Image (cartoon, rainbow, N blue to C red):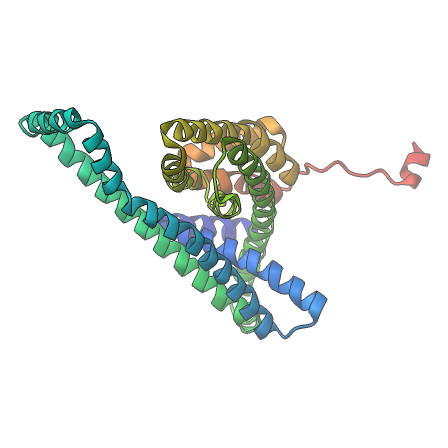
Length: 333
């Protein structure tokens, strides 16, 4: 019956693959929120309602404070760009003539116009995906809040399935789901460690480069680092803008080199090694799993691939942990 339940879960997951990002973000927020809520309840003996509200209000406050520190300087500097361009043109009058001639030539080139339309369409598509991603994260955050707030009611609801006519199917399905969530939670904890190490290295690198607002940039890099692959690309946008406004193209190149080096260090050393330790998989198997799962699932494969392999190995009862030999067994030998 366990394997029948496994097949049904695979079919359900495959049919609902369009909601994969929402489901994974929700699980991540639920896991992190539940860990924080449990810690507060254990140490301060606060009621579940108040501890849940406290955790999510603090999280929102941190996000609002971070964006409140990042966005105003960017808007201020961006508003000064027209004045900087006017000053540059006034300093070099021949630049205006060259720009006018270049724009006229480009406007008369059909291929340039066609490519421009393609780039504009692609840019609008990327903007639409970005807004969809923000909506997904907000929905996942809201769902996790409702889940953690009504956790006791949900336990009663789920327990009712174990007393139903099809309990023989629901029970193994629930066990499989809990097993995957446990493994996935271990991977998320490891990802948090990776994000922490990456953030420390990034802040040190930005400090050497001479970037301002290191605390705010560090918070941004940490939270975006929780998003596989895409988080690095998203973090490049504010980092390069701040670098250009404060140090010009030289600092932009320095930031790009720093991000590439840290990303390579994470992808080829830190991520495979820590994931291998978290799941007891050999480093080579972990490395191959990351490559294959990224091809199959995209960016989420870097997060989902390793726990999926560890999950199936556990389901098929493949023992990766070495058995400890007791003192009695050692004496018998």
